[in-house]
Length: 200
Length: 173
Image (cartoon, rainbow over all chains, first blue to last red; front, side, top):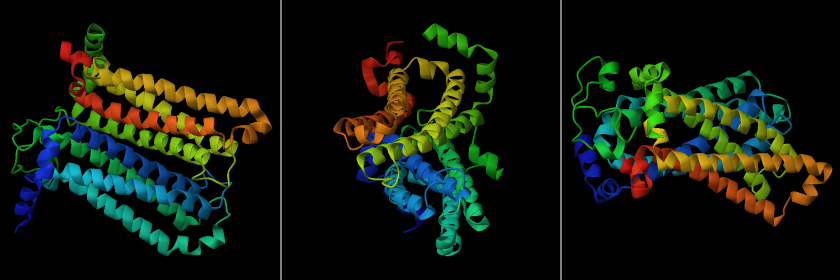
């Protein structure tokens, strides 16, 4: 089975068809995705601001982090679930979308950033737990985290604008604006959907 | 409202956004969503503190002082980016049920946040003993959370206002 066949099977599955045929399901999945990603970003930001010494400075870093991260992971799980369900409705278009790929590359970088932080500055957090701010390596990780997650949100919104979600499917008419062409400076194999469609 | 929306759509700022909408709208919406994240996290953390699921080492006043200003800042950012979105697509926003339902809930959410802050201030040193762990405070924490969740849902539904059927003014146009 090639990747195209797998994606084709995903988007013609009963699950995908069920979501596409419902007036409300896709918008509600999108809304739940916004709530989930908002909480992922917002709770991560609280920890990042603590690392930078900007907020929650009256609490030890370990306390803030322990208080927050379970909610971050719960929200992340909801984002993965809702994101996956939206993906099934238009798997091939999403998979080929340049912004979609950028978004996942940026999330991988955010994950890597977290891993490096956990293996370096966080490992010696006992030394600076009560300090106003983390050492330079911790601050750098916090800045990188904030920048990466803001970019992830931007890419996610761009995905919505260039794929138009459930409404467009693959029967969308060719548009004069093709974002893939902007980035690849070459013709896309598939017509992009109009940017002003409901999914935007 | 339809006439007002049409009038806005003809103003120079609106025309400028419309001619650059391919990047202006996604960019402004992304900033809007980022600010929503800050609002949701602030509201969640204050609610969790009241409900006893987070911030156990912090008093109610400390929790409000930590998250209140960020909530206010994010709400201003939402107002600013929201105004740009309305100017850019006036009919889509102003002639929709979801938008006005959302605005109503935003006013309620802001009023509750302000009320909480004022109550903490007016009670002074007694705030913790008279509010913390009380049933009414916990109910308001849950209500606030639900209001802001509904705000996000309604915000997304602006793009799909037809789901409201006859309630949507666009369906009558």
